[in-house]
Image 1 (cartoon, one colour):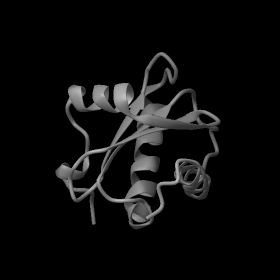
Image 2: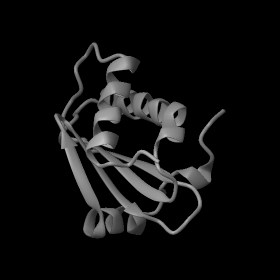
Image 3: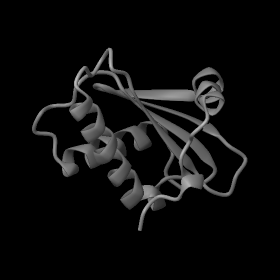
Length: 115
């Protein structure tokens, strides 16, 4: 199934509060920022700036890849968090689902966000 709209961070003020008040862990080109959201479920947002990743095709691919990885693995991430995944620079051309999954697991582990 897809992620519901309620599982996405949509408002810029929500992104801002994750950046401002949240904690973050870094892993290569990825940064995971997180903050408790007071809800029963977690929400995820993606930040991939066109300054860092010039081609829209690459930005969209990164977003799709990580959205999918998150969707399949959200059960191993604590509930009640707002998460923002920041992609700082272009991902390797050949980055596969399994690479993205491994990268997300490393971030989750580093942030101690497993339930």
